[in-house]
Image (cartoon, rainbow, N blue to C red; front, top):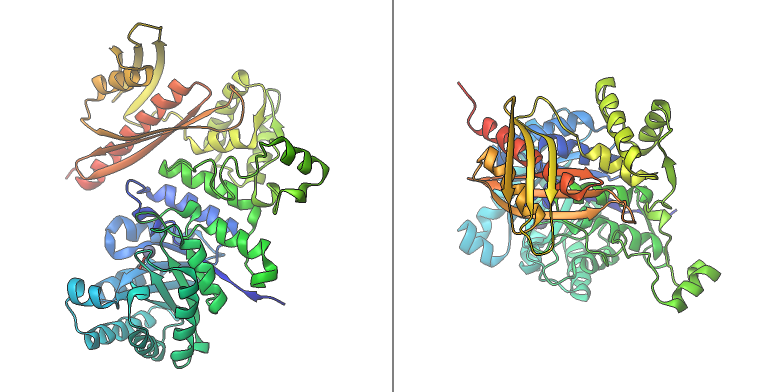
Amino acid sequence: MSERLYIFDTTLRDGEQSPGASMTRDEKIRIARQLEKLGVDIIEAGFAAASPGDAESIHAIAEAIKESTICSLARANERDIRAAGEAIKPAARGRIHTFIATSPIHMEKKLRMQPDQVVEAAVAAVKLARQYTDDVEFSAEDALRSEPDFLCRIFDAVIQAGARTINVPDTVGYAVPHLTTEFFRKLIEGTPNSDQVIWSAHCHNDLGMAVANSLAAVMAGARQVECTINGLGERAGNAALEEIVMAVRTRCDVFDLETRIDTTQIVPASKLISSITGYPVQPNKAVVGANAFAHESGIHQDGVLKHRETYEIMSAESVGWSQNKLTLGKLSGRNAFRTRLQELGILPEGEEALNAAFARFKELADKKREIFDEDLRALLGDSGPDAAERYRLISLKVVSETGEQPTANLVMGAQGEEHRVVAHGAGPVDAVFKAIESVAQSGADLLLYSVNAVTAGTDSQAEVTVRLSLDDMVVNGQGADIDVLVASTEAYISALNRLTTEAGRAHPQA
Ligand code: KIV
Ligand code: ZN
Protein backbone atom coordinates (compact mmCIF):
# COMPACT_ATOMS: atom_id res chain seq x y z
CA MET A 1 0.00 0.00 0.00
CA SER A 2 1.19 3.52 -0.79
CA GLU A 3 2.02 5.91 2.02
CA ARG A 4 -0.38 8.74 2.78
CA LEU A 5 0.19 12.39 1.85
CA TYR A 6 -1.81 14.68 4.13
CA ILE A 7 -3.49 17.66 2.50
CA PHE A 8 -3.63 20.74 4.71
CA ASP A 9 -5.80 23.42 3.16
CA THR A 10 -5.18 27.01 4.17
CA THR A 11 -7.58 28.78 1.80
CA LEU A 12 -9.49 30.19 4.77
CA ARG A 13 -6.33 31.54 6.43
CA ASP A 14 -3.40 32.20 4.05
CA GLY A 15 -5.89 32.39 1.16
CA GLU A 16 -7.89 35.02 2.98
CA GLN A 17 -4.68 37.07 3.25
CA SER A 18 -4.98 37.83 -0.50
CA PRO A 19 -5.89 41.50 -0.84
CA GLY A 20 -9.67 41.90 -0.84
CA ALA A 21 -10.36 38.18 -0.38
CA SER A 22 -11.87 38.52 3.08
CA MET A 23 -14.89 36.31 3.57
CA THR A 24 -17.90 36.45 5.83
CA ARG A 25 -18.51 33.80 8.47
CA ASP A 26 -21.25 32.16 6.38
CA GLU A 27 -19.04 32.11 3.30
CA LYS A 28 -16.27 30.47 5.32
CA ILE A 29 -18.67 27.80 6.54
CA ARG A 30 -19.79 27.11 2.96
CA ILE A 31 -16.18 26.78 1.87
CA ALA A 32 -15.31 24.55 4.84
CA ARG A 33 -18.21 22.25 3.93
CA GLN A 34 -16.90 21.97 0.38
CA LEU A 35 -13.37 21.30 1.67
CA GLU A 36 -14.74 18.54 3.88
CA LYS A 37 -16.51 17.05 0.87
CA LEU A 38 -13.29 17.32 -1.10
CA GLY A 39 -11.63 15.18 1.56
CA VAL A 40 -9.11 17.69 2.88
CA ASP A 41 -7.36 16.24 5.97
CA ILE A 42 -6.80 19.52 7.80
CA ILE A 43 -8.67 22.79 7.30
CA GLU A 44 -6.81 25.82 8.60
CA ALA A 45 -9.94 27.81 9.37
CA GLY A 46 -8.30 31.09 10.38
CA PHE A 47 -6.15 32.97 12.84
CA ALA A 48 -8.21 33.18 16.04
CA ALA A 49 -6.26 36.01 17.67
CA ALA A 50 -6.52 38.21 14.57
CA SER A 51 -10.04 39.40 15.41
CA PRO A 52 -13.15 38.30 17.31
CA GLY A 53 -14.76 37.66 13.90
CA ASP A 54 -11.97 35.24 12.95
CA ALA A 55 -12.28 33.39 16.25
CA GLU A 56 -16.06 33.17 15.81
CA SER A 57 -15.71 31.76 12.28
CA ILE A 58 -13.21 29.09 13.41
CA HIS A 59 -15.55 28.15 16.27
CA ALA A 60 -18.53 27.87 13.91
CA ILE A 61 -16.50 25.76 11.44
CA ALA A 62 -15.31 23.53 14.29
CA GLU A 63 -18.97 22.95 15.19
CA ALA A 64 -20.07 22.25 11.61
CA ILE A 65 -17.27 20.02 10.27
CA LYS A 66 -16.80 16.47 11.42
CA GLU A 67 -14.57 14.73 8.83
CA SER A 68 -11.60 17.11 8.68
CA THR A 69 -9.31 18.33 11.46
CA ILE A 70 -9.95 22.02 12.21
CA CYS A 71 -6.90 24.16 12.82
CA SER A 72 -6.22 27.70 14.00
CA LEU A 73 -3.00 29.59 13.45
CA ALA A 74 -1.34 31.21 16.49
CA ARG A 75 1.86 33.19 16.98
CA ALA A 76 4.13 31.76 19.67
CA ASN A 77 2.65 33.74 22.53
CA GLU A 78 0.15 33.01 25.27
CA ARG A 79 -2.69 35.23 24.03
CA ASP A 80 -2.67 33.71 20.53
CA ILE A 81 -2.45 30.12 21.75
CA ARG A 82 -5.32 30.57 24.19
CA ALA A 83 -7.48 32.23 21.50
CA ALA A 84 -6.73 29.34 19.11
CA GLY A 85 -7.40 26.75 21.82
CA GLU A 86 -10.80 28.25 22.61
CA ALA A 87 -11.77 28.61 18.94
CA ILE A 88 -11.12 24.95 18.05
CA LYS A 89 -12.81 23.60 21.19
CA PRO A 90 -15.97 22.22 19.50
CA ALA A 91 -13.95 20.35 16.83
CA ALA A 92 -14.11 16.57 16.64
CA ARG A 93 -10.37 16.87 15.91
CA GLY A 94 -8.68 20.20 16.55
CA ARG A 95 -5.15 21.40 15.83
CA ILE A 96 -3.17 24.44 16.97
CA HIS A 97 -0.59 25.65 14.47
CA THR A 98 1.93 27.88 16.19
CA PHE A 99 4.80 29.68 14.49
CA ILE A 100 7.77 31.94 15.04
CA ALA A 101 10.34 33.27 12.59
CA THR A 102 13.76 31.59 12.50
CA SER A 103 15.71 33.35 9.73
CA PRO A 104 18.48 35.73 10.81
CA ILE A 105 16.77 38.66 9.08
CA HIS A 106 13.39 38.02 10.73
CA MET A 107 14.85 37.33 14.20
CA GLU A 108 17.04 40.41 14.14
CA LYS A 109 14.95 42.97 12.27
CA LYS A 110 11.37 41.91 12.96
CA LEU A 111 11.29 40.03 16.25
CA ARG A 112 14.38 41.72 17.73
CA MET A 113 15.03 38.49 19.60
CA GLN A 114 18.14 36.37 20.13
CA PRO A 115 18.04 32.80 18.74
CA ASP A 116 17.91 31.41 22.31
CA GLN A 117 14.84 33.51 23.06
CA VAL A 118 13.17 32.28 19.87
CA VAL A 119 13.72 28.65 20.89
CA GLU A 120 12.38 29.39 24.36
CA ALA A 121 9.23 31.09 22.98
CA ALA A 122 8.62 28.21 20.56
CA VAL A 123 8.92 25.57 23.29
CA ALA A 124 6.63 27.51 25.66
CA ALA A 125 4.05 27.95 22.87
CA VAL A 126 4.03 24.25 21.98
CA LYS A 127 3.73 23.24 25.65
CA LEU A 128 0.82 25.60 26.19
CA ALA A 129 -0.87 24.46 22.97
CA ARG A 130 -0.60 20.85 24.15
CA GLN A 131 -2.83 21.78 27.10
CA TYR A 132 -5.63 22.34 24.56
CA THR A 133 -4.97 19.53 22.06
CA ASP A 134 -2.57 16.65 21.35
CA ASP A 135 -2.39 17.81 17.75
CA VAL A 136 0.13 20.67 17.67
CA GLU A 137 1.96 21.88 14.59
CA PHE A 138 5.04 24.07 14.74
CA SER A 139 6.20 26.29 11.85
CA ALA A 140 9.56 27.99 11.52
CA GLU A 141 8.56 31.09 9.57
CA ASP A 142 10.95 31.93 6.72
CA ALA A 143 12.56 28.50 7.19
CA LEU A 144 13.99 28.37 3.69
CA ARG A 145 16.16 31.41 4.53
CA SER A 146 17.11 30.05 7.97
CA GLU A 147 20.29 28.25 9.05
CA PRO A 148 19.70 24.47 8.83
CA ASP A 149 21.62 23.85 12.08
CA PHE A 150 19.45 26.33 13.96
CA LEU A 151 16.33 24.75 12.46
CA CYS A 152 17.42 21.27 13.63
CA ARG A 153 17.96 22.70 17.11
CA ILE A 154 14.55 24.40 17.36
CA PHE A 155 12.76 21.41 15.79
CA ASP A 156 14.42 19.05 18.30
CA ALA A 157 13.24 21.31 21.14
CA VAL A 158 9.62 21.62 19.92
CA ILE A 159 9.36 17.88 19.23
CA GLN A 160 10.42 17.25 22.83
CA ALA A 161 7.80 19.82 23.90
CA GLY A 162 5.08 17.86 22.07
CA ALA A 163 4.80 19.09 18.47
CA ARG A 164 3.46 16.40 16.13
CA THR A 165 3.90 18.19 12.81
CA ILE A 166 6.93 20.21 11.75
CA ASN A 167 6.22 22.71 8.99
CA VAL A 168 9.02 24.24 6.94
CA PRO A 169 7.62 27.30 5.15
CA ASP A 170 9.11 29.07 2.19
CA THR A 171 7.44 32.24 3.43
CA VAL A 172 8.80 34.54 0.74
CA GLY A 173 8.77 32.13 -2.21
CA TYR A 174 12.57 32.12 -2.52
CA ALA A 175 13.27 28.39 -2.84
CA VAL A 176 14.14 26.38 -5.94
CA PRO A 177 13.13 22.73 -6.27
CA HIS A 178 16.39 20.75 -6.21
CA LEU A 179 17.69 22.79 -3.25
CA THR A 180 14.38 22.32 -1.44
CA THR A 181 14.78 18.55 -1.66
CA GLU A 182 18.31 18.83 -0.26
CA PHE A 183 17.17 21.23 2.49
CA PHE A 184 14.39 18.91 3.67
CA ARG A 185 16.74 15.90 3.60
CA LYS A 186 19.23 17.76 5.75
CA LEU A 187 16.56 18.76 8.27
CA ILE A 188 15.00 15.31 8.48
CA GLU A 189 18.41 13.66 8.89
CA GLY A 190 19.70 16.27 11.33
CA THR A 191 16.74 16.49 13.71
CA PRO A 192 16.59 13.93 16.53
CA ASN A 193 13.33 11.92 16.57
CA SER A 194 12.42 13.20 13.12
CA ASP A 195 10.58 9.92 12.49
CA GLN A 196 8.16 10.75 15.32
CA VAL A 197 6.62 13.70 13.44
CA ILE A 198 5.07 14.53 10.10
CA TRP A 199 7.17 16.87 8.00
CA SER A 200 5.28 19.51 6.09
CA ALA A 201 5.92 21.96 3.24
CA HIS A 202 4.29 25.38 2.92
CA CYS A 203 5.45 27.18 -0.22
CA HIS A 204 4.64 30.60 -1.62
CA ASN A 205 4.56 31.32 -5.31
CA ASP A 206 6.59 34.52 -5.71
CA LEU A 207 8.80 32.92 -8.37
CA GLY A 208 6.06 30.63 -9.69
CA MET A 209 7.59 27.54 -8.05
CA ALA A 210 5.30 26.87 -5.08
CA VAL A 211 3.94 23.59 -6.44
CA ALA A 212 7.34 22.43 -7.72
CA ASN A 213 8.97 23.23 -4.37
CA SER A 214 6.21 21.46 -2.41
CA LEU A 215 6.65 18.34 -4.53
CA ALA A 216 10.43 18.60 -4.14
CA ALA A 217 9.90 18.53 -0.36
CA VAL A 218 7.64 15.50 -0.77
CA MET A 219 10.47 13.73 -2.63
CA ALA A 220 12.63 14.25 0.47
CA GLY A 221 10.04 12.83 2.86
CA ALA A 222 7.51 15.59 3.60
CA ARG A 223 4.14 13.91 4.14
CA GLN A 224 1.96 17.00 4.55
CA VAL A 225 1.55 19.76 2.00
CA GLU A 226 -0.04 23.09 2.88
CA CYS A 227 -1.89 24.53 -0.07
CA THR A 228 -4.94 26.51 -1.18
CA ILE A 229 -7.67 26.14 -3.77
CA ASN A 230 -6.74 28.02 -6.98
CA GLY A 231 -3.39 28.85 -5.33
CA LEU A 232 -5.00 31.77 -3.52
CA GLY A 233 -2.83 33.39 -0.85
CA GLU A 234 -0.58 36.16 0.37
CA ARG A 235 1.07 38.08 -2.55
CA ALA A 236 1.54 35.65 -5.48
CA GLY A 237 -0.29 32.98 -3.51
CA ASN A 238 0.37 29.50 -2.11
CA ALA A 239 0.85 26.14 -3.79
CA ALA A 240 -2.38 25.18 -5.58
CA LEU A 241 -4.11 22.20 -3.97
CA GLU A 242 -5.54 20.97 -7.27
CA GLU A 243 -2.09 20.88 -8.90
CA ILE A 244 -0.42 19.08 -5.99
CA VAL A 245 -3.16 16.47 -5.75
CA MET A 246 -3.38 15.81 -9.48
CA ALA A 247 0.42 15.67 -9.85
CA VAL A 248 0.67 13.06 -7.10
CA ARG A 249 -2.21 11.09 -8.54
CA THR A 250 -1.26 11.31 -12.22
CA ARG A 251 2.44 10.63 -11.52
CA CYS A 252 1.94 7.87 -8.96
CA ASP A 253 4.88 6.17 -10.67
CA VAL A 254 7.09 8.97 -9.30
CA PHE A 255 5.48 9.76 -5.92
CA ASP A 256 3.81 6.49 -4.89
CA LEU A 257 1.60 8.31 -2.39
CA GLU A 258 -2.12 8.43 -1.73
CA THR A 259 -4.35 11.30 -0.66
CA ARG A 260 -7.89 11.16 0.70
CA ILE A 261 -9.05 13.75 -1.86
CA ASP A 262 -12.19 13.11 -3.92
CA THR A 263 -10.82 14.72 -7.06
CA THR A 264 -14.29 15.11 -8.61
CA GLN A 265 -14.90 17.84 -6.02
CA ILE A 266 -11.95 19.94 -7.22
CA VAL A 267 -13.72 22.02 -9.87
CA PRO A 268 -16.78 22.72 -7.66
CA ALA A 269 -14.36 23.88 -4.92
CA SER A 270 -12.47 26.07 -7.37
CA LYS A 271 -15.67 27.68 -8.63
CA LEU A 272 -16.96 28.28 -5.13
CA ILE A 273 -13.75 30.02 -4.03
CA SER A 274 -13.61 32.07 -7.18
CA SER A 275 -17.18 33.27 -6.90
CA ILE A 276 -16.93 34.08 -3.19
CA THR A 277 -13.61 35.92 -3.36
CA GLY A 278 -14.10 37.48 -6.79
CA TYR A 279 -10.69 36.13 -7.85
CA PRO A 280 -11.26 34.76 -11.36
CA VAL A 281 -9.39 31.65 -12.48
CA GLN A 282 -7.17 32.30 -15.49
CA PRO A 283 -8.41 30.25 -18.48
CA ASN A 284 -5.09 28.44 -18.95
CA LYS A 285 -4.69 27.57 -15.24
CA ALA A 286 -3.75 23.91 -14.76
CA VAL A 287 -6.61 21.57 -13.80
CA VAL A 288 -9.28 24.20 -13.05
CA GLY A 289 -8.88 26.73 -15.88
CA ALA A 290 -11.65 26.83 -18.49
CA ASN A 291 -9.16 25.74 -21.17
CA ALA A 292 -7.41 23.06 -19.14
CA PHE A 293 -9.12 20.33 -21.18
CA ALA A 294 -9.89 22.27 -24.38
CA HIS A 295 -8.13 21.05 -27.50
CA GLU A 296 -7.85 23.73 -30.14
CA SER A 297 -5.50 22.32 -32.77
CA GLY A 298 -7.03 20.00 -35.35
CA ILE A 299 -4.27 17.43 -34.85
CA HIS A 300 -4.95 17.30 -31.12
CA GLN A 301 -8.73 17.12 -31.58
CA ASP A 302 -8.32 14.27 -34.04
CA GLY A 303 -5.99 12.45 -31.64
CA VAL A 304 -8.33 12.84 -28.66
CA LEU A 305 -11.31 11.62 -30.67
CA LYS A 306 -9.38 8.52 -31.71
CA HIS A 307 -7.90 7.81 -28.30
CA ARG A 308 -8.23 10.27 -25.41
CA GLU A 309 -4.84 9.51 -23.84
CA THR A 310 -3.01 10.73 -26.95
CA TYR A 311 -3.23 14.28 -25.63
CA GLU A 312 -4.84 14.02 -22.16
CA ILE A 313 -2.97 12.85 -19.08
CA MET A 314 -6.07 13.03 -16.88
CA SER A 315 -9.76 13.29 -17.69
CA ALA A 316 -11.88 16.38 -17.25
CA GLU A 317 -14.49 14.33 -15.38
CA SER A 318 -11.92 13.06 -12.89
CA VAL A 319 -11.44 16.60 -11.56
CA GLY A 320 -15.13 17.44 -11.62
CA TRP A 321 -15.72 19.13 -14.94
CA SER A 322 -19.24 18.00 -15.72
CA GLN A 323 -20.02 16.85 -19.21
CA ASN A 324 -22.36 19.82 -19.53
CA LYS A 325 -25.00 17.27 -18.69
CA LEU A 326 -28.49 18.62 -19.04
CA THR A 327 -29.96 18.15 -15.60
CA LEU A 328 -33.23 20.01 -15.28
CA GLY A 329 -35.62 22.00 -17.44
CA LYS A 330 -38.71 24.14 -17.38
CA LEU A 331 -40.99 21.24 -16.57
CA SER A 332 -38.92 19.80 -13.74
CA GLY A 333 -40.75 19.66 -10.44
CA ARG A 334 -39.74 20.63 -6.93
CA ASN A 335 -38.79 17.06 -6.05
CA ALA A 336 -36.42 16.66 -8.98
CA PHE A 337 -34.94 20.05 -8.10
CA ARG A 338 -34.45 19.07 -4.46
CA THR A 339 -32.91 15.69 -5.42
CA ARG A 340 -30.40 17.29 -7.80
CA LEU A 341 -29.38 19.92 -5.20
CA GLN A 342 -28.91 17.13 -2.70
CA GLU A 343 -26.73 15.17 -5.14
CA LEU A 344 -24.63 18.28 -5.74
CA GLY A 345 -24.38 18.91 -2.00
CA ILE A 346 -25.89 22.40 -2.27
CA LEU A 347 -29.32 21.79 -0.74
CA PRO A 348 -30.19 24.89 1.29
CA GLU A 349 -31.27 24.49 4.89
CA GLY A 350 -35.02 24.74 5.57
CA GLU A 351 -38.15 24.59 3.42
CA GLU A 352 -38.36 28.36 3.07
CA ALA A 353 -34.89 28.61 1.54
CA LEU A 354 -35.66 25.68 -0.78
CA ASN A 355 -38.92 27.31 -1.92
CA ALA A 356 -37.13 30.59 -2.64
CA ALA A 357 -34.43 28.75 -4.61
CA PHE A 358 -37.10 26.80 -6.54
CA ALA A 359 -38.88 30.05 -7.45
CA ARG A 360 -35.57 31.45 -8.78
CA PHE A 361 -34.96 28.21 -10.69
CA LYS A 362 -38.39 28.50 -12.38
CA GLU A 363 -37.65 32.10 -13.35
CA LEU A 364 -34.33 31.02 -14.84
CA ALA A 365 -35.89 28.06 -16.66
CA ASP A 366 -38.34 30.48 -18.29
CA LYS A 367 -35.43 32.39 -19.77
CA LYS A 368 -32.89 29.65 -20.38
CA ARG A 369 -33.76 26.50 -22.26
CA GLU A 370 -31.12 24.20 -20.77
CA ILE A 371 -30.19 24.22 -17.11
CA PHE A 372 -26.84 22.65 -16.18
CA ASP A 373 -25.29 21.80 -12.83
CA GLU A 374 -23.19 24.97 -13.08
CA ASP A 375 -26.42 27.00 -13.39
CA LEU A 376 -27.77 25.41 -10.23
CA ARG A 377 -24.54 26.15 -8.37
CA ALA A 378 -24.66 29.79 -9.47
CA LEU A 379 -28.33 30.00 -8.54
CA LEU A 380 -27.69 28.67 -5.05
CA GLY A 381 -24.53 30.73 -4.63
CA ASP A 382 -26.56 33.86 -5.24
CA SER A 383 -28.84 34.13 -2.26
CA GLY A 384 -31.32 36.21 -4.27
CA PRO A 385 -33.28 39.23 -3.14
CA ASP A 386 -33.93 39.32 0.56
CA ALA A 387 -36.70 41.54 1.87
CA ALA A 388 -34.89 41.85 5.18
CA GLU A 389 -31.90 43.50 3.47
CA ARG A 390 -31.51 47.25 3.42
CA TYR A 391 -31.30 47.60 -0.39
CA ARG A 392 -33.23 45.66 -3.00
CA LEU A 393 -33.52 45.69 -6.77
CA ILE A 394 -37.12 46.16 -7.92
CA SER A 395 -36.69 46.81 -11.64
CA LEU A 396 -34.13 47.99 -14.15
CA LYS A 397 -34.18 49.37 -17.67
CA VAL A 398 -30.94 50.25 -19.43
CA VAL A 399 -30.72 52.02 -22.78
CA SER A 400 -27.42 51.71 -24.63
CA GLU A 401 -27.06 53.04 -28.15
CA THR A 402 -24.07 53.69 -30.41
CA GLY A 403 -22.95 57.29 -30.08
CA GLU A 404 -25.23 57.98 -27.09
CA GLN A 405 -24.49 57.95 -23.40
CA PRO A 406 -26.02 54.85 -21.77
CA THR A 407 -28.89 55.51 -19.37
CA ALA A 408 -30.09 53.40 -16.45
CA ASN A 409 -33.65 53.68 -15.12
CA LEU A 410 -33.63 51.97 -11.76
CA VAL A 411 -36.34 51.24 -9.24
CA MET A 412 -34.73 50.24 -5.98
CA GLY A 413 -35.93 49.57 -2.45
CA ALA A 414 -33.96 51.26 0.29
CA GLN A 415 -34.93 50.84 3.93
CA GLY A 416 -38.48 49.92 2.97
CA GLU A 417 -39.00 52.86 0.56
CA GLU A 418 -39.17 52.69 -3.21
CA HIS A 419 -36.86 55.01 -5.17
CA ARG A 420 -36.98 55.75 -8.93
CA VAL A 421 -33.77 57.13 -10.37
CA VAL A 422 -32.22 57.82 -13.75
CA ALA A 423 -28.46 57.99 -14.24
CA HIS A 424 -26.02 58.22 -17.16
CA GLY A 425 -22.62 56.60 -17.32
CA ALA A 426 -19.58 55.94 -19.48
CA GLY A 427 -21.01 52.47 -20.15
CA PRO A 428 -24.20 50.64 -19.15
CA VAL A 429 -22.65 49.11 -16.01
CA ASP A 430 -21.29 52.50 -14.98
CA ALA A 431 -24.77 54.01 -15.46
CA VAL A 432 -26.34 51.30 -13.29
CA PHE A 433 -23.78 51.70 -10.49
CA LYS A 434 -24.23 55.49 -10.57
CA ALA A 435 -28.00 55.02 -10.30
CA ILE A 436 -27.58 52.75 -7.27
CA GLU A 437 -25.17 55.17 -5.63
CA SER A 438 -27.52 58.10 -6.19
CA VAL A 439 -29.91 56.28 -3.84
CA ALA A 440 -27.47 54.63 -1.42
CA GLN A 441 -24.87 57.44 -1.29
CA SER A 442 -22.50 54.99 0.36
CA GLY A 443 -19.31 56.74 -0.72
CA ALA A 444 -17.73 53.29 -1.17
CA ASP A 445 -14.90 52.73 -3.65
CA LEU A 446 -15.32 50.09 -6.31
CA LEU A 447 -12.21 47.88 -6.08
CA LEU A 448 -13.20 45.08 -8.41
CA TYR A 449 -15.86 44.28 -10.99
CA SER A 450 -15.57 40.81 -12.46
CA VAL A 451 -17.88 38.86 -14.78
CA ASN A 452 -17.77 35.13 -15.45
CA ALA A 453 -19.96 33.10 -17.77
CA VAL A 454 -21.30 30.12 -15.83
CA THR A 455 -21.70 27.83 -18.84
CA ALA A 456 -20.93 28.05 -22.55
CA GLY A 457 -23.21 29.88 -25.00
CA THR A 458 -24.71 33.32 -25.19
CA ASP A 459 -27.64 32.28 -23.01
CA SER A 460 -25.25 31.49 -20.16
CA GLN A 461 -25.86 33.02 -16.77
CA ALA A 462 -23.41 35.73 -15.86
CA GLU A 463 -21.87 35.52 -12.42
CA VAL A 464 -20.72 38.93 -11.28
CA THR A 465 -18.57 39.89 -8.31
CA VAL A 466 -18.32 43.45 -7.03
CA ARG A 467 -15.79 44.40 -4.35
CA LEU A 468 -16.40 47.62 -2.41
CA SER A 469 -14.32 49.33 0.22
CA LEU A 470 -15.38 51.88 2.76
CA ASP A 471 -13.18 53.12 5.60
CA ASP A 472 -11.26 49.97 6.56
CA MET A 473 -13.94 47.53 5.41
CA VAL A 474 -13.68 45.52 2.19
CA VAL A 475 -16.63 43.37 1.10
CA ASN A 476 -17.60 41.29 -1.93
CA GLY A 477 -21.09 40.99 -3.37
CA GLN A 478 -22.25 38.41 -5.91
CA GLY A 479 -25.08 38.29 -8.40
CA ALA A 480 -26.02 35.69 -11.01
CA ASP A 481 -28.49 36.20 -13.82
CA ILE A 482 -28.88 35.52 -17.49
CA ASP A 483 -28.90 39.31 -17.93
CA VAL A 484 -25.41 40.60 -17.17
CA LEU A 485 -26.75 44.02 -16.13
CA VAL A 486 -29.18 42.51 -13.65
CA ALA A 487 -26.37 40.29 -12.28
CA SER A 488 -24.17 43.41 -11.96
CA THR A 489 -26.92 45.34 -10.18
CA GLU A 490 -27.53 42.48 -7.77
CA ALA A 491 -23.82 42.08 -7.09
CA TYR A 492 -23.46 45.80 -6.29
CA ILE A 493 -26.54 45.80 -4.08
CA SER A 494 -25.39 42.64 -2.28
CA ALA A 495 -22.01 44.32 -1.58
CA LEU A 496 -23.82 47.41 -0.24
CA ASN A 497 -25.93 45.23 2.06
CA ARG A 498 -22.78 43.56 3.35
CA LEU A 499 -21.15 46.91 4.00
CA THR A 500 -24.18 47.84 6.08
CA THR A 501 -23.98 44.56 8.02
CA GLU A 502 -20.22 44.95 8.57
CA ALA A 503 -20.63 48.57 9.68
CA GLY A 504 -23.34 47.41 12.12
CA ARG A 505 -20.91 44.84 13.54
CA ALA A 506 -18.11 47.37 13.86
CA HIS A 507 -20.33 50.02 15.49
CA PRO A 508 -23.24 48.21 17.15
CA GLN A 509 -26.07 50.46 18.33
CA ALA A 510 -26.17 50.76 22.10
O1 KIV B 1 4.10 31.63 4.90
C1 KIV B 1 4.24 31.38 6.09
O2 KIV B 1 5.35 31.36 6.65
C2 KIV B 1 3.03 31.14 6.86
C3 KIV B 1 3.25 30.59 8.24
C4 KIV B 1 2.40 31.29 9.23
C5 KIV B 1 3.05 29.11 8.22
O3 KIV B 1 1.94 31.30 6.38
ZN1 ZN C 1 2.07 31.32 4.16
